[in-house]
Every structure is written in C-alpha cells, then in structure tokens.
Amino acid sequence: EVQLVESGGDLVQPGGSLRLSCAVSGFTFSNYYMSWLRQAPGKGLEWVANIAKDGSEKYYVDSVKGRFTISRDNADNSLYLQMNSLRAEDTAVYYCARGAGWESDHWGQGTLVTVSS
Amino acid sequence: DIQMTQSPSSLSASVGDRVTITCRASQIIRYLNWYQVKPGKAPNLLIYGAANFQSGVPSRFSGSGSGTDFSLTISSLQPEDFATYYCQQSDSAPLTFGGGTKVEIK
Image 1 (cartoon, each protein chain N blue to C red):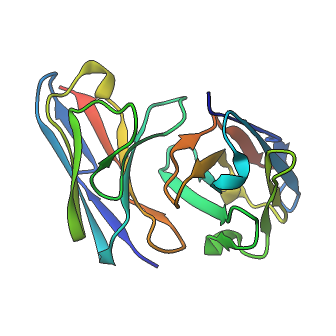
Image 2 (cartoon, rainbow over the protein chains, first blue to last red):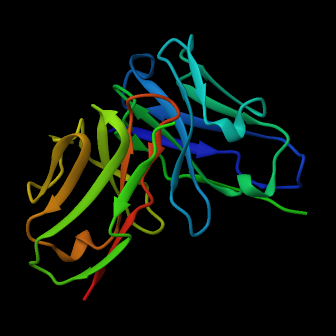
Image 3 (tube, chains in turn purple, blue):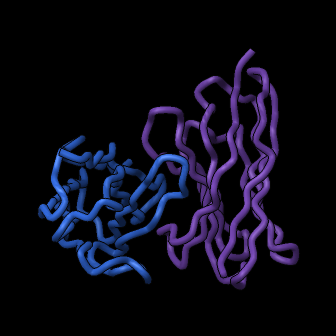
C-alpha cells in the first residue's frame, strides 16, 4: 500500500523556519517525481515545489523561490521541504505527493503550518 | 505562467444528476489533471492527461478536451461525490490549479 506521511508542521513566528518531512512506503521512491503542495485555510490548492527522481532538477512557485528548498533522500525514502523566512501567507496545510509525471497520484494527509506572532 | 479558469465556482445538484465542470487554460496545454478534495481528507487524483482514468476511480467520472478547453463530467452524481473539484495543468512549472468547483447537494 502506498503511504506518504508528512510531519514537522507547527506554529512559527513570521521570519522563522521549519523543516517538513515526508516518509514514504509501499513504492520505489526513486522512480517517482515528488511534490509539495499546500492549501491555505478557505483557499484552493497551490503547487509549491517539484523535485526530479534523482534530485537533479527542482522547481518552485515564485512566491517561495529563495525561501523554500525541496530535497530528497532516496536511500531513506524521504522528502523534505526547508522553509525559511516564513510569512503569514505561508499558513496552510502542506501535502507531499508523488507522480509518475508531474501529476500527483498519491497524497499524504498533510501537516499544518501556522505562521503567526 | 499558465492561468487556469474553472467554471462554475459552485453548483447545486441532486443525486443522479449529470454534472459538467469546465476548465480553460490561458495557452494550449497537453497535460490536464482533475482532483477531488473533501474536507479533512487528502486530495484524490481522478483524471490525468485530460482523459485517462486514475486506477480505482469510478467510471461515472470522465474527462475530455484538448488545447485550451477541458471538462470533467460526472454521469450520475452519487452522495460521495459532493466535494470540491480542481483542474491542474502539469505541462510546465509553475504547475497551476483552477480556482475549484464546489459541488453541493440541492
């Protein structure tokens, strides 16, 4: 069974940092693109970042470029999102997801990031 | 960036109704995906590449379209289908979603 489990969400002050993790099981992690996506309270879905199967290519939405870094450890079946200089508008449920291409065919349950003083 | 425009933003329908949601891209795309989102649950991929069924998705869901205009049809709405639906283009980064269509019970 494919499983993706996010962790690391928390309440953080504006300007602070968080590192989200996503532990996966049930599939060969290194065969899939991985993504982070988010949904702010009462808002729609937003794609945040993608990473290639071997980690060689990374893509970001403009609003997080220079602040967030996506990475993966294929030996440990783990995906990460390092989030720096957090802003109130980054408040959202963050999901990790996998895809054979850039579609996301399995998602985790999400982890809540709240940026507030 | 490719802009995705979904319509309607919400609709009310009854069990058994046929429902169609449309999605328009700001430029020609090939890869259009549809997701179903229920409160408190992980989003669920329904259709990828405009018309390909994701494994396990009921056959009452179908996708069609090409170029800039796409649609998701639910042939006979079931109680478990009341949810919010999003289209997404995965042609090029940044991957972008439509604004969503909330399907509510009439």
